[in-house]
Structures are given as structure tokens and as C-alpha cells.
Length: 271
Image 1 (cartoon, one colour):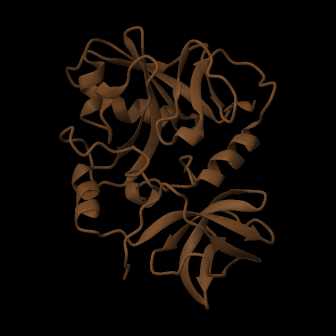
Image 2: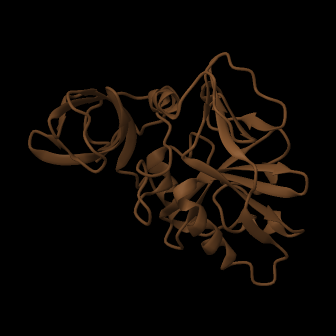
């Protein structure tokens, strides 16, 4: 029963009576859907619609809790705080909580916990006191989520450059198309409804040394993408949709073969 303490992640707390309305106008998903036992996956974008951060939202005892990358905690608190204006909210680092994940046959714990909202196969996430996981590691979790094709923030997405739909936010329930305006909504909607997407984040099998994030991917000598995160012989890579899936590609000293996870929807044709 694999359970891992995700030590590369942290928890931010938002309190105050305006907390839901405040965050609703800033992030890609519907904050009102967060409730005890139900988490929401959302992203914060630039005004131009490029990714800055993504996180899981939990609602509990008069507060919102953000499960975010630890390296982005201070940035998120600072950026979100800029938009408080007259909103009655406060943003702080949550004390005494750590991020946990379980999958496979592991039972969801009692407390602040919910199914991973992206895929049933992803398992569950929980915000619990820090401790040592008896049955899993961060590496085990990385292997699990890469096999499913799930991004994990940076380095899978690049700040102020990545587009949400490249990383599956549509199919993986990270965007609300009905909630109203939020920062960066225009580009996100235009990308979807005008079919502007040219690249996607694919799971890849890696034969050879694991390339570093950002290593160019080549097809017959032409650059067609770049490597993102990886572990062992598997990874995620951003690849042009015009490249036939499964075709042998080169990346550093390794050979890559991409696959399409069952949840991913691809256009019938790509330029």
C-alpha cells in the first residue's frame, strides 16, 4: 500500500470571509467546488495566460489550504497578496501540515484528504502532520505519476512560458470553462476553441541515460521538443503534435519513444 510524504511540497493557508471569492477571480478552476473530502486542481497564470504555478485546493474549517510546490511558496504568497485590495483575506504558510499521497490499494486517511481530482488512478492526497512514510518515497510517487502522464509543476511546466492545455489541464479537470473570468482566461479559452495547440506533454520511455530537463528532442536532426521530468527509464517530454506517436526520437545520449495515456484527447490532424 504505497504512501509517500511529498517533501518537495508545502501548504499555504488562506483565511478570511472573502477567501473563496478572492481566489475565484485569480485561478483557472472553480474554487467553490473545493469542499471537505473534495479537492480542486487549479493554476495561477500570468495576465497573458502563461503558467506560473499549479496546486491542489482543500477547504476545511473556514479556510482554504493550498498544496503547492515548496519552492514556489513565497512567490505564491507574494503574488496572490498583491490582489487582496479590500478583500478580507490573509495568506500564510500553514503550520504543522505536510503533503501526503497514496495510490494503489492504500486507504485514504481520516482528516484533510481527498481523491486526486485529476484521475481516479492517481490515488489520493492528504494534508497531515509531518512524518516518515512507511511504504513509499518521493521517487515512488514520481514513478507512479509519470506512468500516468501527470505533470508535477516545474520542471514539467515553465513559468511564464507554458500553456495549460499542453500539460493536459483540460482533460485532467484543471480548468473550469463555465465559472467566469480569471487571470489569463482569454488565452486559455482561445487555445481550446481555436485549436491552437501545437505541442503536448507525453509520457516517454527512455532508452539510455536520462536526459536533463530542457534537453532538446530531435527527429531526423530537427528539434521537435524537449525533455521535462524523468526517473529511471521513464519521463515526460513536450513534443510537437505533428510528430507520429511512438516514433524513435533522440534526446542527448538517449532514445525516446512517446505514448498516449488513455485520458489524453488528441486532434485528428496537427500542422
